[in-house]
Length: 249
Ligand code: UDP
Image 1 (cartoon, rainbow, N blue to C red):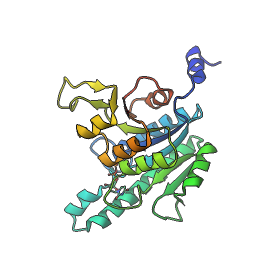
Image 2: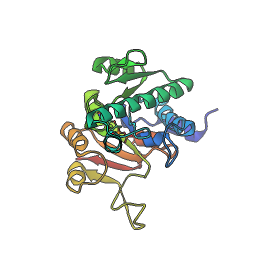
Image 3: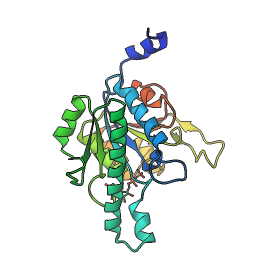
Image 4: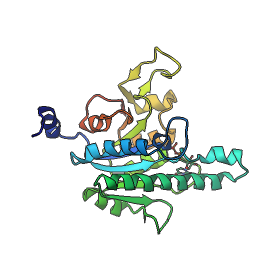
């Protein structure tokens, strides 16, 4: 028999029907390490499942920073910067394939769509096809960023959110949201519940790339910055409950 609490939650209607979740690569590995950690991966998959269970459509943009970032590898090794960015995009495909299998193991149908054609491993990104998958209840993992160098997966997430008509861009972070100062360095830093796009851009708050914020502002896509490492936060986020920092007008 369902508990009272479970029944109450199930009855609540999600505030957002279609979400685009941006996960950084570092969310997939252990702190200070590289590669993929199974425990971290499963924790993220469970959070995604928690909103699929209440019918929310989920597209995911994964980063690749747990393997490499273009700008860093280009300066460290003598690799042309553009090439290094393509390497970074390929790293996101590795993460996408890993997340796909873990979600499928939990019973969730998934498709990976890549902005760089990799026919043997995943589909190409095709907007209308992506939307159809979402409507059918599949999670779509958008890999390889924008498919072009010199930008990041934050930009890909903003573009993707606008393109598929997401109601919100959920930006997963390791901290609880946007603070008045760096909470790691300043004990007095306060979590901001709400911000407008201009404040984030003008104050150069390190939330996402400015181009990504600008894209969301122009198309009226709210951004919710929240801690995905905390169990239950993803569901709270889509139910419109108090979690993280909401950036809008
Ligand atoms: N990247 C790129 N174009 C894109 C998205 C990503 O060139 O549209 C490259 C870029 O080098 C970036 C790397 O892929 O550093 C990994 O992505 P990102 O740094 O955004 O990953 P995250 O920090 O989210 O893990």
